[in-house]
Image (cartoon, rainbow over all chains, first blue to last red; front, side):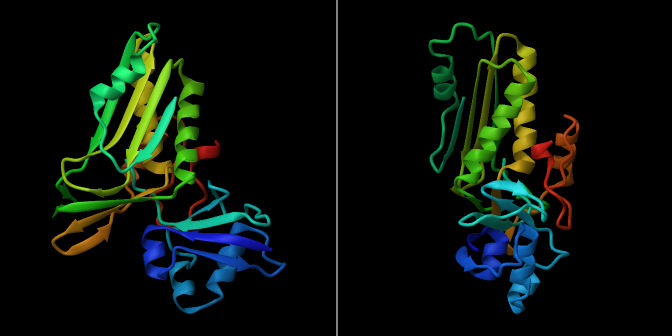
Length: 85
Length: 167
């Protein structure tokens, strides 16, 4: 499955990347699965997206949890807690 | 119902005048203006950069306004949130709510701000003498949303499940 990744704020800065199109292995079917897949790249990815990081996730522009299913062409975003207003 | 995300400043009087125009059913208007402070967490702030997630930001703000409309009889609402470079004393956010009577407008305005603080994808980066730093989410903001019966965990230090947006 091919999806679009987006990174924001401190996550974007630490990764040095704001977006990426990625083709996922078949076994990756959820947002949490995408996170684990990216962690498996190791290095910065394992650190910035580590399980104990305060990371928020969105699928299709809606905040979601790790169990949220993904679909072809969808957009998955990772970012820190929000601080607007 | 209007939601705008913009780099430009806004003028409260102009915005309220536009909102009132041709709507003589309005009996109460409440507005909130958020402003950049020059001191945060004991550090002098000389400038700020506000980042957001285009598309999701508008969607989140639309959802917040819809939630307010589901709770109170509102005649109109306006939310403007600025992004990009901001300086101390600059206006960041404007929320205007209009209703027949004051109770709804007061409550809805506070609700929209409380919701926005923990649910809308904006991030502040402050420029301080020690260098630039991303602002941390505050638990007090989660508690502010809790008082409306919506549990928020934006400030949690782990990868908490999503906040009350879907509740």
